[in-house]
Image (cartoon, rainbow, N blue to C red):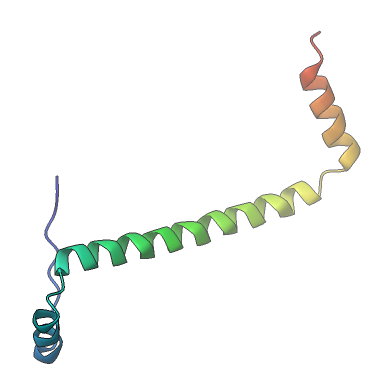
Length: 74
């Protein structure tokens, strides 16, 4: 299902869009998808950095023991 988005632009910009035969829907859709992708990448990067800070506080030996214990059937 699609939704309608309305945007107001200057007349000169609209004239140039017509002059260059720009597909407004496709151009806006691509631009919005790119912007969302960038924002999601920033969010993911922030989450990874937060996890790094947490994991840095756990001693390596404890991590290795936990991994080893999870692999050993008991």
